[in-house]
Image 1 (cartoon, one colour):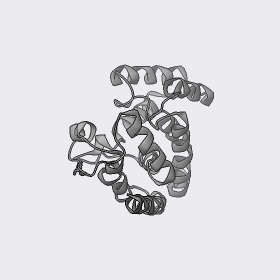
Image 2 (cartoon, one colour; image 1 turned 45 degrees about the horizontal axis):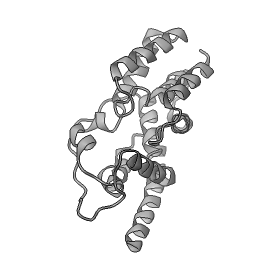
Image 3 (cartoon, helix red, strand yellow; image 1 turned 180 degrees about the vertical axis):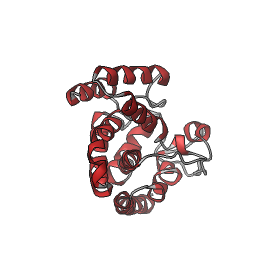
Image 4 (spheres, helix red, strand yellow; image 1 turned 30 degrees about the horizontal axis):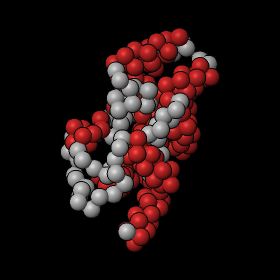
Length: 213
């Protein structure tokens, strides 16, 4: 496998994204996932880092909020993995992780993930909170013509994917509808600890926002 080929593919797919899902988001998820995995792994799992790295880089390249045709995107990812000589078994795990790790895929029912998948999922969720998470929340809201704040639009309890994607909301509401809840959805001990720290930072930001309003 040539990692540079994977990175180039992700660059091509995510370059110029203004919603907070650009190449550097993918790179941060790779770095975070590796740190979490190294803290959680046992000795016999050390060779699985290739699966983790590939899943972390590719996780947003098939996301239906970012691509027009997720099925075609999956075909492209599989073709890339074939070209890089990734075994069918490893391909299956990579594709399973990236198809089942998102917040929307776990609404209503938590999807089972291997330790590798859990670390990638935790890393993706960590990048959605804290200082970077705040920046990404407003980038995403602005890119989707969402107002920053409207006191007449209250946060809702999200039950399903349709409500998550389509209900009227604001960038501030997104913190209450999703981001503040992520710390309770973490899989790994290290991920949970970091999520608590980043959530505390967001809480302070939201208090300051309320005070200034």
